[in-house]
Length: 477
Image (cartoon, rainbow, N blue to C red):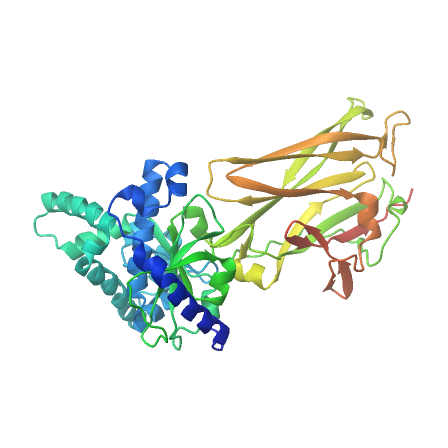
């Protein structure tokens, strides 16, 4: 855990929020009707089951805030997250409660490695007991949790009359599919932190902000005369400056892997050379081989993920042309668009906030020849969505269909379409071969990236930054 110094501006902000929000927080009644548990915006946008899901997450975020007032609970939660998910800073509520039935497969695997760590497992039980004990003692303050748990308890009692309320509450909570996420968890020193904390919940209808709730810790410097102090807007920037606990929902693909290993590029041709200066693309003929790689990528913003996701899942496609080849080997009179899909790249919130370069080692094009006068780069982000991201663009064909030979000049354009399920299309851009070869090295506005002694030209597409490494193999005519 990294320690940060106390921020007086942050402290003043909390004091200001406490005073200005006191009236707002104390004058809004806590209605027990489900529709009043969420805003009208939610009610108009979500199904009944989603409304209930969000309302329960909201109530549990308040339960969590009360439990997190205690220093030991805060320390245990941070330690558990660091053990379970150092990449996405998230843990399932099932893992917090030590209930294997609702844990992610990756969490179950990691917990097996901790079975012999008795001191850790012993410490982690305090947090679980605190959540269960506080909930049972204060059920009347959380109408939806109370109503849902009473129904769950009745069913459990019919099956086993000797079951305890605490055991059933543990099962009930574990069955709700909730996840606790602490954005930028490693930024805060939980052993020393003694200021207010914020909790919030995923409203489903947006991913960038939501209301939040402030809670005093043991040594907080503000006084609370109401049990619920609201923060109107909690977003990613807020969570970077202020310890924030986000209650969201379990999606298995968010827990598939923490930080995947870096893929390797294909072994280069023995006589290939790396291009270390800018070139006239006409000097690399159709007979030569120009293998183009993407060694690293950098994400410069968390706008693609917002507050409620644990990582940004980036997917890129290359759009190119496909020349029609006749049965005798000659090229026909037309071309179609085609696309190439690349591996998903995961960026943590820290990766984006601190703009870290991430090794991806993608072979963008094994032979970017003259006929591919231009190509398209499509950027998608993958999410837990039912919608499909779609995009289209055009690429220029560098082929003289009359003379039947490749040319550095564009002779026609073809359309390229691409779609990806469970994703959002972000941006696309045309990559002209001539321009790419003219900007292998040097700064054109987005800086350079030093690799193997070469200052490669950094190129942008949306919030993503990248550079090309070209390997050239000369075949004499």
